[in-house]
Length: 329
Image (cartoon, rainbow, N blue to C red; front, side, top):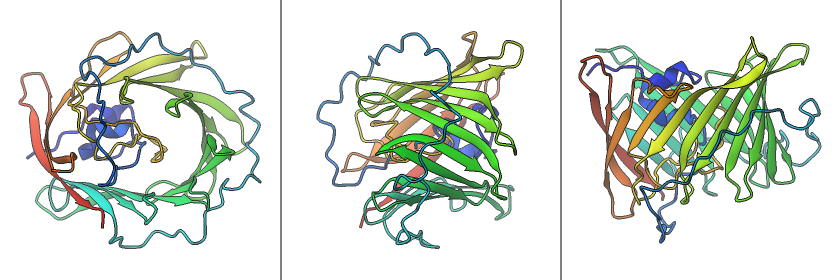
């Protein structure tokens, strides 16, 4: 089957074709994959009645963006030396597998903290060549995410005010500054916005991008709004809206928001969306609408996923099936 790049690769930091729409929102997120013993939501709510998205949040700047968070706070960039990812993890994991060479996988430690996220795909048809993106997560003694490393990019350090995440700093592989991220959260702990600054070698910051997140009454991310700086107006202006709709009432297998930087501790999806698409700032739908069908296991998690991507222009939809593998032992 020919693998077709999905539209999100145009707006997100490139990951892989198989991540599809889910990972824009890559990324990050991751949102921990729920362990088997987690009870099913007893009040799933109305799957056809998402919360009113309301008007877009006015893009802006955080208070004192040039004032760093106190680096002496415990956990700010100080990984617990006892928490080291295994080279070949064999413990708890969840994997969405499309083939032997194409898969997504999330690994956990004994505290159910995500230690690694892997996305891999067959990069050359008819061969065993693969492209692999691996992200590792490091925590402090208080189980706060303090560092991310990857085999593709540099590293990201996270800074807190108490237990509240406030800021992240991204460096390249030579440890030079690239970006700073500022986060705001709702009173219920849901991620509300992420503001991004580009940083030059002299530590000068330029406002660059803002993402705004909106949820339904069950806590599922239903709209992600992407704003970028317009050089002509010197303002952040809406670029794209990403929509997640028609949720089931089952438990999400990979619920963290997989935008970049990943935030695996914050849940983006409680349930599983069955429709994903995007519209530009004028409301026109972009190509690449995705539809999902699921089977479920006895624990209420997806057992398999059938994904169809609408290509348009008279071309047939791209459809393929992946299977979920769980190991919570």
